[in-house]
Image 1 (cartoon, rainbow, N blue to C red):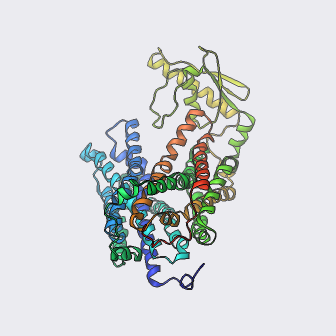
Image 2 (cartoon, one colour):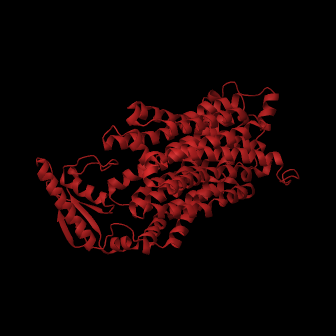
Image 3 (spheres, one colour):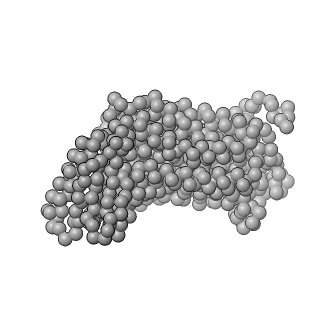
Length: 552
């Protein structure tokens, strides 16, 4: 039952808590996403002494490092948050994040200091990941512990908008600087500007956070002498708490994470890579969908205070499982109708001896394949063409069939470098010519991109993001007792989002490369979201009426 206290309007102090926590978290996400948005330029600046393939691998490693260390940040800062307090811990995390980002903007390139440049860059990226691992849990716990009993979903949902707003802010700053100084200057030195200006955001955020009070739940617990002396062993060493941590990961955050990354990252990747829509158009359409969708984080947060957190999160996961394939199919028709028509009319197949087909994951484009099967598949993958596989008897030379036309591949083993180069050029030209004749476009025709439909489809994907993500902070806070809340909720959140979610693009890319079908990458989020739906429905309890002031 809502009380008179719950129905009072938000006080000035509560507004300040939400504003300060959200603002700081927006800046943390801004800092985190800058790297991803500028990965290609950063690879050239910091890994230029390496060959192109190794440079790209190092750039991916630096990007992944930020995701991989997030759970360790959750452990380090979660422990501090439960022992010394919420306020000072997430003050420390924002300073680490802000300074790491600022230093990237000043870091000399590979040309200036050699191999020290990429080593320092990866170290800074790991510091960012550690800080983010402590920041989100701190902000969510801090806001939830200031919120009235029946408004926690509404209050914490503001924190949930911050990842989207941080992504949006990073894209806007990059676009603004690029437009102002031109592409050449931006690639040379202008890319540093978004990193350097983050120091101003840091100063504002630290100033606001210094003036805030500790959370009432933590103050009450501290006054009663009930703070945890060993939050890590209490959270993960006792089965009654560890069981909830595992359920929170499998039955909540893993599914939430893959739906989040599918709606905001994979959709953009799919538009540009699979559907060949030009980058600026794809970015603008995704930005529109984010602007339209962001208010729904708060809508679903408020709704979760009334009907519960679990039904909304589970419904978002189930809708993802049921609709992803048809929705991404509709996205193909809206963004690149020529490609959709060609796929329907002239299917592409690869007939080959399965024993000579190796694993096709080649993100750097530098692996040299020599078997006729691998060469055929690599050419189709390079052209972003979906195909079906047909097994052939041992020793058969692989062939590609486009509609009714068949083209034989070749084996490069034993050929001289010049002969291999000549064969490669002839084969690629034959495939390209036949694809063109079959109506396969080399890129999406800007005049045929149905921008309204694409935005509507992207908005639907973002809507699913808001369903799973809007209520999750309140639910995680409510699952755990006050004395170990920061530690316990941060770990499943960051394993779910850092590992299951952060590694989604790479995993989906590997599945597509292996199977040949551009839609098969969707199996990864569908399976994970399906697992979360089943486990969540069966084993995760509803939490909206929990008393979060309880210590045990």
